[in-house]
Amino acid sequence: RGKKAFIAGVADDNGYGWAIAKSLAAAGAEILVGTWVPALNIFETSLRRGKFDESRVLPDGSLMEITKVYPLDAVYDTPEDVPEDVKTNKRYAGSSKWTVKEVAESVKEDFGSIDILVHSLANGPEVSKPLLETSRYGYLAAISASSYSYVSLLQHFAPIMNPGGATISLTYIASERIIPGYGGGMSSAKAALESDTQVLAFEAGRKHGIRVNTISAGPLRSRAAKAIGFIDMMIDYSSENAPLQKELSAEEVGNAAAFLASPLASAITGTVLYVDNGLNAMGVGV
Ligand code: NAI
Image: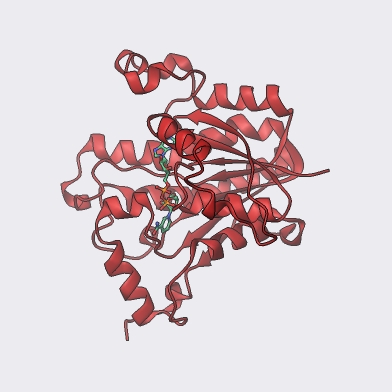
């Protein structure tokens, strides 16, 4: 039986979510994605018009198929949580059932169960502000979109995950080392995500027999990273200072995710796996 994967946080072909989808598809998984509601229209249109066809090519020459795209906004758990202005916003009004609980229900209705859950999303409205200047609103919004969103996804999807299943999120070393410029509470959000990875590994392991891991990825020129504003500098810094002096490709993170999701990793849970050309191991720049 082929495995089914739900990947939350795919809205173009540049980010880690897309690369993870490809690696999982190459390994034979059926791909379902959750796309942020405001980005849904352009993503689906681009997909339909063949704009991503070149990046859909898998190692065997076939094209990755996305079985279904679900609208998702991971900062809302149930319809009752959605404020009126969002409900009536024209980018949201055209879609329905996009809160976490409703998406899990739709996936259950459509496919019964899944095997792999990937959280590849983050958002911090004040990311370009230093932590010292971050507002309470900005900090809590970063935690809500980037950390609690994972707790919520697991809460609602774990019951429809087959035993032996795996879940993976994406984190960044700014959680444990000082990375000036990664502000707005995003460093705090990643620290929460990593700590939660351990607690959730215990709870979901005991209750559902599933594994929970996170990948601490090196810098990638994704849409989200470009919005932070220092991505080119981080890529240069990495190629100057990391043990492996090459640019990190999204595919390398995708492949590590496919490993973590596979039976090859059946005893690995509660871990942070660094996929960063080894940069995390350096104590000083060279
Ligand atoms: P990306 O822009 O491809 O992915 C972020 C996605 O999150 C986007 O598709 C966006 O639409 C979605 N999103 C934002 N708010 C959402 C919400 N409320 N509900 C649902 N979806 C929402 O960028 P990237 O960089 O691939 O990000 C994926 C993950 O990788 C994030 O967790 C990020 O922090 C992490 N990461 C990225 C690094 C980089 O250098 N690009 C380095 C280390 C970790």
